[in-house]
Amino acid sequence: SRRTGANSGRRTQLMRQEIEDLNALGLQTRAAAHHEGLAEIELAAGNFAEALAVLKEADTILAQQGERSHRSTIQAYLAETHERLDDHGAGRATGLLDRLRIDA
Image: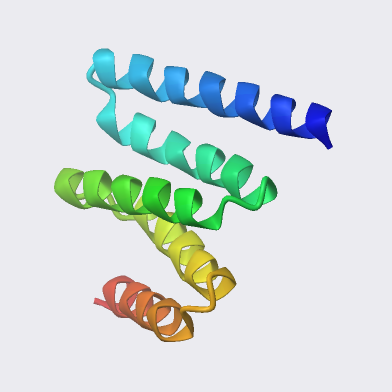
């Protein structure tokens, strides 16, 4: 509905502002972790491609920071989002890479 779409847009805007504020404070890892919430909003709105872009950005940031805990969660969401986009091979590959990193 229109109202749901408007609420989703407002939540997205607020979440993006929060991420921007955290980055401005030098809290890149925390900001990247907030991408998970933004991706959940996008997924709920059916914006799978946008959710995928948000998750990839978070994964890149967390990899640069050497962060593993939040990154494994982001990678699980990446695999799920690839599956939703019918990119089953990428979803399985992301999940496999995640398992390999955790086992290492």
